[in-house]
Image 1 (tube, rainbow, N blue to C red):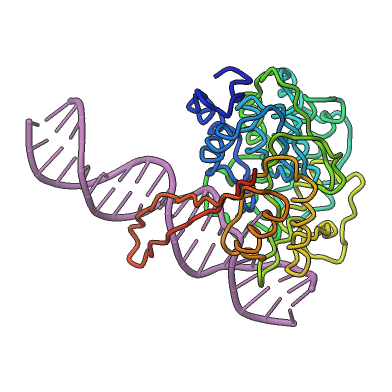
Image 2: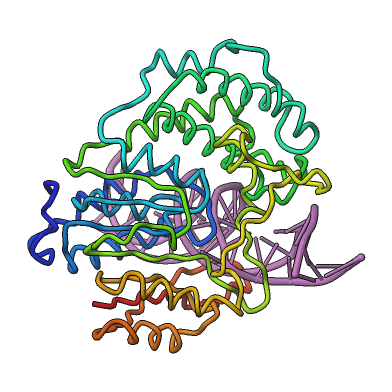
Length: 355
DNA sequence: TTCGCTGCTGAGTAGTGGCT
DNA sequence: AGCCACTACTCAGCAGCGAA
């Protein structure tokens, strides 16, 4: 499809090229990632139509990228830094890629003698060799600017995420090394592969897109046609702190500049970032305020069944500001495990569409 | 409430065997 | 040999878990 084809409530939009493009988006293992749901979301967005779109909690970036592929003028926002960098590289960036020479330089000898990562996370994450590479790569990245810098950081973040066992930085050491490829590959080789993936994701949509880093309530009130919301959810019992799991990626995206490591923690994580969406006591009010803020836009909200507040409450909150509230259930395919005790579980994801 | 940790599900794919 | 349907097994991913 051509950029802008999403006009006119999406009639005549050919989703196949969009779905194909989105499927190739570099995948980050991330809580609540919408990678698998992207094709469904694309169909919904195309049906809604419009010119401008906001992804207020962009996370892995795959939904903002989907909106871009549909021809929207996209604003991606997240309160963490590394999602902002990924969106800058893949959504805001329309043309720049890393050249083979630039990738070689980043993978080559260091430009200075920095060793913050090697020293700080000794014995916690990755091999000495891998952490030396992270310092060395950053010595070159610090000489890059704009989209190229964002691309290089994105590739470095994804390399680290892929190589970390279980994909979460709440666990230290190499205890779970089962010999799989992602763990065997050096971070340098990972970086080369991830950089190629991010390069391949770059395309020109012909619509100006941007990436912001900040609180959703601090966003300037602009009349977006479409606002997509995938907020962190407040589990009834468990905590869902993103920083706890992804602190290393957040630090790596900034070379820990302006970040405060909690030295007393075993994992050397960063301080927890408060968000009202994560607490059962404040989540409903945070949603209410968010809906109020975007009451002039079509709101699309992703929701999964375990969250607080429940679906009824969310629908009621939406009806306070929107006249037409629709709830859709996206059924995933069944899959058939061959294990003796593989239970078949129906997984469904709710999608609220409020016009 | 905050801490670090891992068992289990199911998607992916190589393997198997019957058939043309 | 080539194709297809189905099986068996590996391994990536999980808005979660128990302990203090």
